[in-house]
Image (tube, rainbow, N blue to C red; front, top):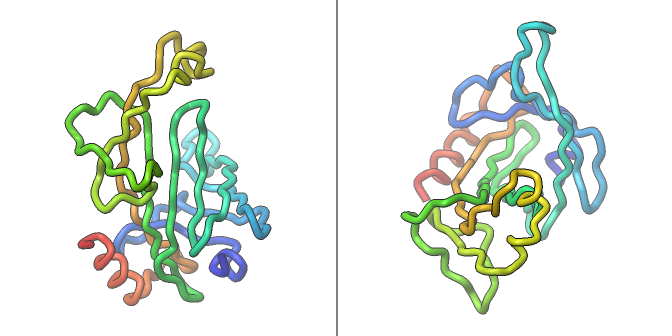
Length: 177
């Protein structure tokens, strides 16, 4: 993803809000197949600095990246729908295991699951894999059977104090879609 080639540090925001001081991403490693970030997760009052974690994402086709953990049952999928040298607009879909029984059932295409549904939905996991899940032994119970999506669209900006108008317009359009 070329945005990461030219922008080794950027901030994350939604709309035209000024990003939080600790919402930064530092690209610590970039290859053709992966990007590794150190990302700010919030302010630590005791140490008077931002806390951070390291995360690795894998690249898919067409400006998509993802991170999946079968152990703890989540998946994060991001599609960079617009980018220039100053900002990028990202469509995000986060999947978590939950006991949600109200959300719409996700539609499958030829047995394949779509990581980018058009509206929030849930897939039921009816496999026996749940019984042998490492998460089950860690927390002492079976994980929830439903994988449900929630949208987490965002803007990546290179200047923390300036969210370019073209990006806010693309972001607003994405939110309405």
